[in-house]
Length: 422
Ligand SMILES: [Cu+2]
Image (cartoon, rainbow, N blue to C red; front, side):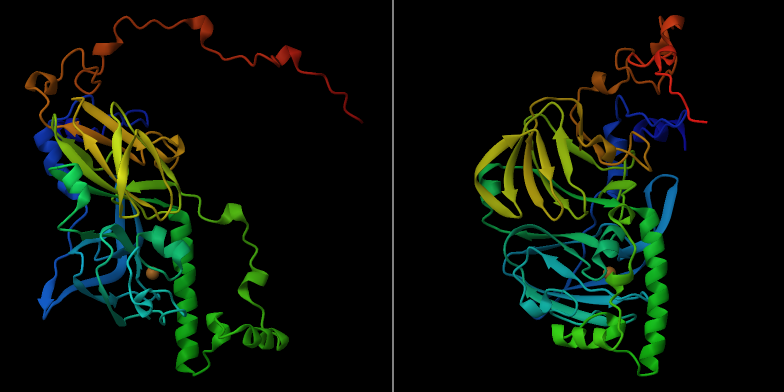
C-alpha cells in the first residue's frame, strides 16, 4: 500500500492500534467507497415479471484487510446484492443452491403468498444441495426490507445469507417531506466466525449422512427431526427415538458470541462512508440482519426518523441515537447542517471491535464532500498522527510517580491476612 492509500483509508497499524483519519481526501474515499456499498441485483423482464437470480455458495469473506474466513454468501458477496423494485412489481427470484447444505429464502417484511415465505417444513421443503426454487410475489408494501436464509438460521444468517430488498413508491411521502438527493443502504450484522466454522463443518458432515440414508431409502422424520404432529413424535419417542435437544449439552454461553460486527459486510476501517454536502439531505436505510442490537449514534447532528420497518412515519421525530434491534429496519434523514467529518457508530462499544480489539466493527464516517480545500489539507492543528507521527508529541512529559495504578481499597499491604488451615 502506498502512502496515499494509507492516508485515505486510515488503515495504519502501530502497536495493534488502528487510528481514525483526521482528514480524508474525499475523491479517493469515494472511489474506495464503491466497494463498501451494497451492489444492485440486475433483472430481466419476462412478460410483466422482473426476474432476478440469486445463488448461494461457499465464499471467502474479508470484513477488514488481513482477516479472511470461509462462510456462505449470496452471489459471492456479503451482504447479498440489493433487490430494488417498485411497489406492485411482479417479482420472480430463481434461487440456485450450489452448496452441499439446505437453504431457503425468507422475504422479511413482504406480503408474500404464504407458500413463498421460505420457512422450511412450514411453507416449503428446504432447497436441497444443487437444487433450485422459484420464488414469486408482488412487491408490497413499500419501504426498506430484506431477505435472508431461513434454514439453520442461527448459523446461516450470521454466516452472511442476507441482503436488502427495497420497495420504492413513486409517490413516496418521505421524499415529499424531505427532498433528499442521495441515499445509502446500511446492512448491519454480527458474526461469530468460530461458530460459523464449527457449525458449517458439522452441518456438512450431517448432510453426508443424510444423503447416504436418502440413497438407501432410509431417510425419515427422525433423521430430519421434523414430525407431522405431536402424536408422530410421541410414537417415535416411545420406540426409542431421542430428540436432539434431549442430548444437546450446549449452554447459552456456547451459542454465538460475535467477534465481528459489520456494516455492509465490512468492519472498520473498511466500513462505508456516508457523503453529504452543506444543506443537503441524505436518506440512510438501516437494516439489522444480525442477532445483536446496535445503538447507533451520530456525532454533531440529530437525524430524522422517517420510516419504521418500511412504514413511513406520519410524524417524523428527531434523534441522535437509536437502538436498531435484530430484524428491524429504520429509514433516517440526515441534514447537512454541521460541516466536517463525523462518526456514526454503535454506542455499545463492545461492538466497535474486531476480534475484541478496539477500534473496529460498527464505526463509520459521515463526510462532507464540500469541505473547504484548506480543511482537507492536513494542518498542524488537525491532529492527524499519520502526517507526522511525532508532531503532536512535543511537550509530552511522563510523570514517573504516577505510572502505577494502586488499588485504593486493598493496597497490597492492606490485604486481609487469612489464616490457612493446615
Ligand atoms: Cu442457508
